[in-house]
Length: 142
Image (cartoon, rainbow, N blue to C red):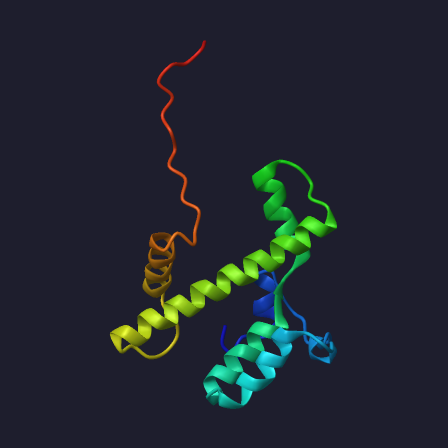
């Protein structure tokens, strides 16, 4: 997501700004220490992208509704929060791989659908996306 998205557009996508919670106050976290070391080395574009990644999260109602449609059951709060985290990591990987594909082709600007399809293909080939073939049933009971 780029910085031009308004809060209304984010809410329409099921994304919510998480600006009020600052997790950098947590002491003793090695990941946060690494982030503090890397942040000064980011380009302004990378810094803006990273800040947007940190403060945007998927809305619980949207994730809960999708999970309910897929599993036909209501998920509890802990499972919804875990799925939000997994989804955010997946989208981050997809965006990062899309940007890599764009850099390899020498393309600039926003990510296009073709870049996302290429990133998905690359992640699938690297076994980072579970890919299940539908198995044919040879013998069926009636």
